[in-house]
Image (cartoon, helix red, strand yellow):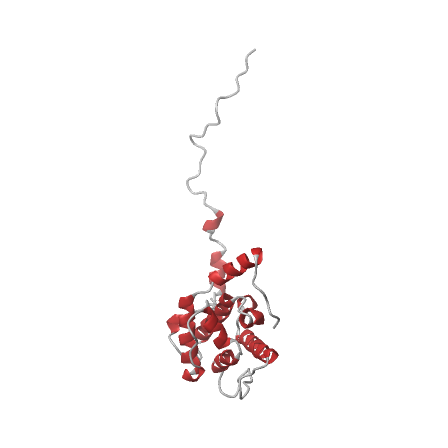
Length: 200
């Protein structure tokens, strides 16, 4: 990547706001999950935003993570034998992870951009993507999730209701409370001020 000098003015303000969104406690939880999901062979990062970024930067750990959520024989990301050292190969590995995460069900609005991780532009976005992936894995409950299910929120699931024809017909006779009620309504006691005085 191009060598970038320090940011000044508004650019620095924006970057510092983005960096403040990074959550150190969430980082600890995500590291625990990734190690539980992939095994101890992935190692552990140095504590802090930079250590987390360096650990994930080449895309291998992320690829192992998303592959571990699929059954054997249908792994979506090909992992090279040796970690890629060339910049574009590392970015390509991250892009493959993002594609596989999207195919798994992570929505586009929860996805980070490759440069957010590779250049450490927005590590909070990387955390959001991993949390969304973990939440989906817990929600699917297909036996591929490893770790404490309480680490992530379960996503809301559809709860379809079936009504018989008689229940539907009965519902048409009831006035919903959103439409208000006219019980006890009368004009008794209402006055509209003094009547008009006609003086001749």
